[in-house]
Length: 308
Image 1 (cartoon, rainbow, N blue to C red):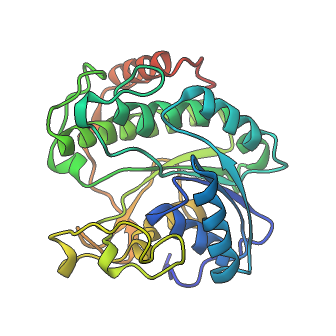
Image 2 (image 1 turned 30 degrees about the horizontal axis):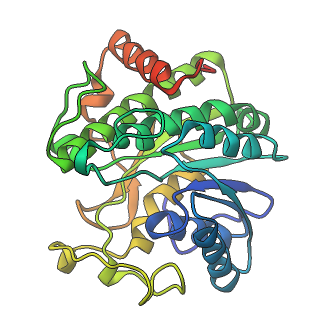
């Protein structure tokens, strides 16, 4: 179907949660959902930043509504506390797994002793999904399933990573990040396979944002302004703002024609309208046995008994 990211389907009566919602792509995804009338749950670790994001939504997306949930993705106890709040909501139509640390200096570990990128991009989100799956399943129907949208990167295809040792951390930050996102993709596809097998009215999808840069991002007080740190990016002339970088994830959450296992990405490598991306990564091509092995290992590290 044709898709206009500036005119989303009517989302009144629907509820979506977004991790990493206090800045960048996460915030703008929340804003776009709220603009279409959705109730958005902003998930983050800073009470002050969560309130700033909520205030920005009230100004720039008054058509919707919002609330906040505290959650530190680097601490599984915090993840479970926040997930319990989400699981107690009357409905949850979708969740965008967008948050995650980028700092690997000094071999940083999470509160649970896991490599920080693995912990925040993969393990925390797996624990979160397990905890909120009952409310997602209660909200979804076979004709209108609830959505779990995982965020990946084009680096997964450009720089294939081995997943036989999920705890091994490459020394170069971008490679370590790519490995974490490779594991994200493996988990996303395996989750969708398991949901299908169980007949659960929830689908698992992936999105890739392209490259979003501060220099092209709209101003939002407390979110993106003179008080927030800006990063220079050599791809700025060819890239997009973080508002349009959110388009792929928002389409994955809201496109009525989306199916489990779909991957949404910009038309170009760095930017463009959100479309289905049919190019498969190595993560999508693992054997069922290898995919299940990685899933079981990630579940063990996350300290959960997988719900599917």
